[in-house]
Length: 287
Ligand SMILES: [Zn+2]
Image (cartoon, rainbow, N blue to C red; front, side):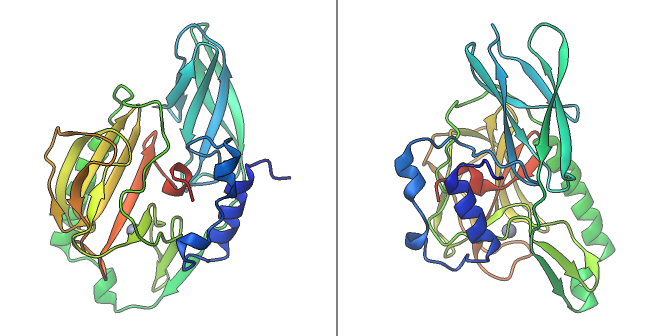
């Protein structure tokens, strides 16, 4: 049995069927009229989000997942933990630790299996094996970005329905596993949106600019902090108009689409992170 809201199911089936070339106008919109949508959507699969009901409590409970702080939303009548599930999570029982002021308790939830597509590619070894200096650069950049990802600040908005950062065709390649010459790579952990170089990129929610850089793989990159462990990242930018510390309102432009870093053409790579875990951005935006 599947207990997800119908829209999530329809969209997931569409994604699984590889229908990412459908014009957006043809995507199902019925659920928007139903008015029962919550954002992000609950999708207890690897790369998804578990919305866990914590019940009433006088103050905001503290929740940890794998030792990392989790975003908790709501009010004293009903609190909800918004838990990011890693793409590498095994299907089965998972748990978070909840402290609502009366000691710690464990709360379990079940992660269902989800098979993401796999792509086997044969390419020239030169394009797979990094030169030692590039590898060293990438390692440095990764260490730096891990510090950015660990931010856990006060929430900037209780509303988590996101605005799509650029108009354009959204690919369903989140979770796609690429195997180069038999060597598996990390799965694709964001959403690619096709758009021309120069198209403005806007903030999907209120956020603070917490990283601006030019990285080996990701090219021109900006990270936004939306608070309480919710961050978003924008890569391959041709131009960055924001600087570290800028606070952006929803819809405010801060960069432009490009093809910088290791890419084959202009598009926006959009990543969304909860409790230091990349999750599917599609769960935060209406279809
Ligand atoms: Zn991408």
